[in-house]
Amino acid sequence: MNKLLYLSFLILISIPLHAQKSINDTIIEPIAIDKSILSGVNIPKVKLKAHPERDYYQKRIYKGSELSVYILSSETAVNKIDNFPIDEFVYYMNGKADIKAENGNEVSFSSGDYLFVPKGFKGNWTNHGGNTYNLELSVISNKRADSTAVSKAKLPFVLDKELISGIRLTQVNEKKYKDVIYSGVELEITTESEKPGKTTIINNKKEQFIHILNGMVTIKSLKGNEQTFYKGDFFILPKGYTGNWTSSGLGLMRTLIVMQK
Image 1 (cartoon, rainbow, N blue to C red):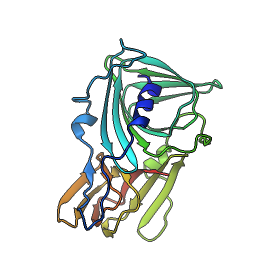
Image 2: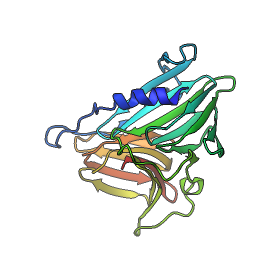
Image 3: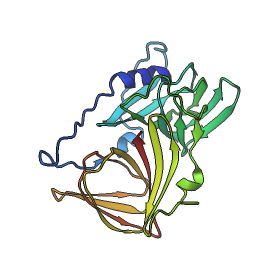
């Protein structure tokens, strides 16, 4: 996979498709991420100009007012990255990646890892598909940071596994817990947890890419439509959403959330 080539393409086409109207004009609904795509099914093949011989697959799953979500898959390949142009959240779903930074530091990622690729990273990125292909879920911001802004992190890294596992959570009130896992120059990753119950969301302020880490949630819009998301599910809670949020689960219902800075 040539990450720079595909990211240049992503940046050019990151104009929102889901323009948000006022609540009086339309009823905004949560958007589930297609499980078949997440399973690596029916991802279109894309020819890379720099590597036309390489097997590479890509599909934009969602483009919203603030975030874009992609699925990517490639045969084993090595890529040299001179200056990574954006922040990127990645959920590595199949295969392995070995990264060697320009300064010589090394790190590896495997299936099941949540990672952050910081703007400004320089080095080599090697994807290993083994007997199959690697598979990545990617979330980026539609808004570019100032060209001089560079993330404090210099090397892609695995997000805090203890926070994602529900350990060392910070309680903010009687029912809620929240921790900022990482704040980059374009994206912020948080984990939010709550005691099961019902709340009302009024005009959701930011578009949110949400992954259910534990428990389940049923979301009912003003129109009366209900959607239920379970542990392992991914969905978008759009900017401007208004409706009811009812969480269930043993202990805390927990989520991982990606938002634009």
